[in-house]
Image 1 (tube, rainbow, N blue to C red):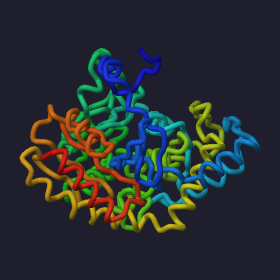
Image 2 (cartoon, helix red, strand yellow):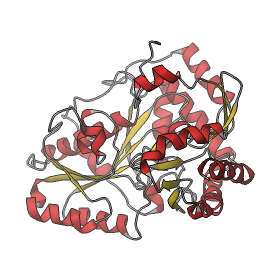
Image 3 (cartoon, one colour):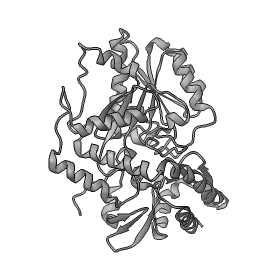
Image 4 (cartoon, rainbow, N blue to C red):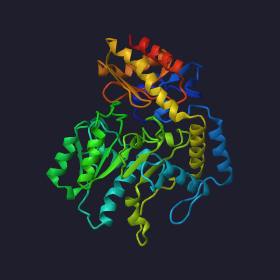
Length: 409
């Protein structure tokens, strides 16, 4: 039995069958320890936007580590590269003048935003605004706050009845349900509403037409903060020239949580982006927010992020994500005709979900995909995730769809 404890795994099964060992990646393909090649359907775990094997990013990190690897950014400490990255991310943000707090990853970013929402209202003399509303099927990381807000029941089982007080979960596609909560408990008690523009781990669900605009308007009308969880969709995955889904859908969120595509997964990093009115009470002076992470804003990760953005901009990968939106729809929509497939969800960004008719077949389907040369994963209740790197060509999308079809036929 090996010593590695895998995340989200039946370790008995891993022990019996052995791990799937990846030794190399290049572009949109990965290779196992036997030399077998696989198309990477999921860009790692939603994150390898620029593809595998980008030595430019590794070299940038190496230069930074050999100069000064990291130092705390608590108090007035900061690295020059970190300051530059904050300016660059703020310039991408949908709300001008935003402030950026860096974290170690997406789960940290979510907990940061939820804590800030409550602390913000306290600073404004309204500490009773504590309730945070989330949605069914939602995934917001695996820290205490994110798990409390999760809309995936299996992720909350076995830990007791309540992680964090003052949270409520509503149906993912019903804007009126949000309004109902606000009216029932009183807007004076609601701090924030958090939503993924595209539900990721909960099963790859695209937003119903007009839904995001409606919930955003409800929040604005009732003085409730809107937190856009863009850990999956941030940094280009939504396409159409936008760095964030919030820009494409004109949401102007109060806060954005992000990670994954920030460094294309080359080094762990996350960020919480706050609109200027959220930051103002803390930037005015005299107020300490006692929150932060030892490795939040790691200098090596900042170097990776800067190199990652350089590649995206130089190679026009935001436009490539837009192309992938059409390519994925064209290549995967026909799979809905297969008996094993109930639905194909596609058409918004470089994201597609293939919903299996029999959700209990999901893990077996992932293994069949692997035998057909695709590294993939299941999400939600029996959906197969497709979220490739932006560098995947049209020919490679078609090749991947053919491999999917062979595995599911």
